[in-house]
Length: 148
Image (tube, rainbow, N blue to C red; front, side, top):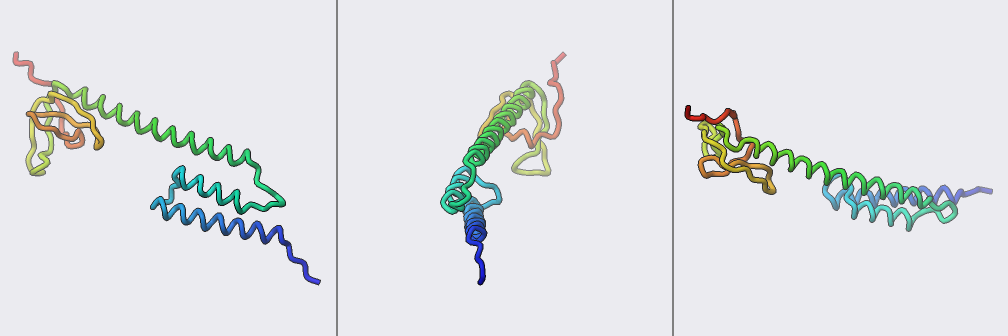
């Protein structure tokens, strides 16, 4: 008489289904990182396909969701701090003489006094001689001539 362990078979099916769902979520997001939507899809797949004789502890799901939320908030905070740092760097250059790489001709440089600092979706920039340049194009910074 042969014995089939149905509990083990259900767990194997669940694990395979969860793996397939994770691969689909990874392909959907276009990277190996899971977004919150992909995480929730994976969570739903796990809940639908769990072993009815040995259900998963819901506190594990809640813990994972809390960790995911915490990481998401830390990433937002990091982005905000980076943006603040960039504008602080750019604003500290106001009134200073800078040399920049000419974006139209990388073999030549542009020199002038920073009159304004800006921040936009691409990062911080400074205004020199009436034109806006990324702070990444700055080659050197020195104190402005006082004229004395």
